[in-house]
Length: 246
Ligand SMILES: Nc1ncnc2c1ncn2[C@@H]1O[C@H](COP(=O)(O)OP(=O)(O)OP(=O)(O)O)[C@@H](O)[C@H]1O
Ligand SMILES: [Mg+2]
Image 1 (spheres, rainbow, N blue to C red):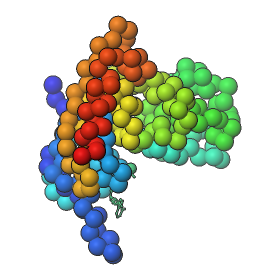
Image 2 (image 1 turned 120 degrees about the vertical axis):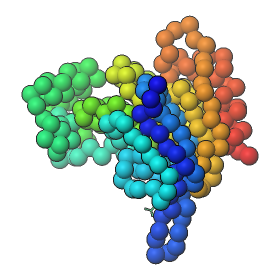
Image 3 (image 1 turned 60 degrees about the vertical axis):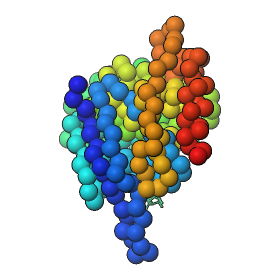
Image 4 (image 1 turned 180 degrees about the horizontal axis):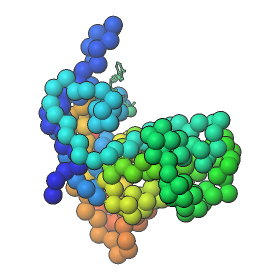
């Protein structure tokens, strides 16, 4: 199978007036269709930089990034605009890209219905709970029909219970649309529950330290919530914890 994303020996150094900060070093990994990749690493090691490189916001100093899919980007903060209604926030990206058609408007209304946001379509973001805002931000990102989603700590602003529910919601939505995802997180349990493969990064500059393929034994269909019940869960947790703390 052809990867949607292929990074080969990527290097990136920030140049500022104060000097150079190497952030990414000889980084290589791939993401395949329908695959969820987790990225875990020490604070400040270069995780967000990796997503910016993939999104094309910055260019590598050396190495190669081959992207063969539309990419959507969801950040830690949802960046909903407070002066627009939820409906207008969702259609904003489409409007900017001149892709707002009556079909897309219908699709947006269906998504709002499906994700329990229909009664809030005309409300402002400030009137919504954290979980509802996150779902609205997801619909806005999905409206542009990406095949791969970059998620940078998307649940970290949410309280624990909402976090579990929203991560289940988002998992189901992405799976049902047969999308791929890269999830950057500090939370080992979240990564194991969500991802098919996890890469643990070194301290800055970020490089792959170890890769874990996640195989869980479950009687029910896999969701992040169900995944936490799998017998292998705590062994993965301990191994990844060990990698992060040596
Ligand atoms: N625009 C910038 N200019 C200069 N240095 C930067 C810039 N952005 C990030 N850095 C530096 O690059 C390094 C990696 O930053 P990055 O944000 O990628 O780390 P991170 O792993 O996402 O951190 P966190 O865990 O806090 O989210 C840090 O040392 C940071 O100070
Ligand atoms: Mg970051």
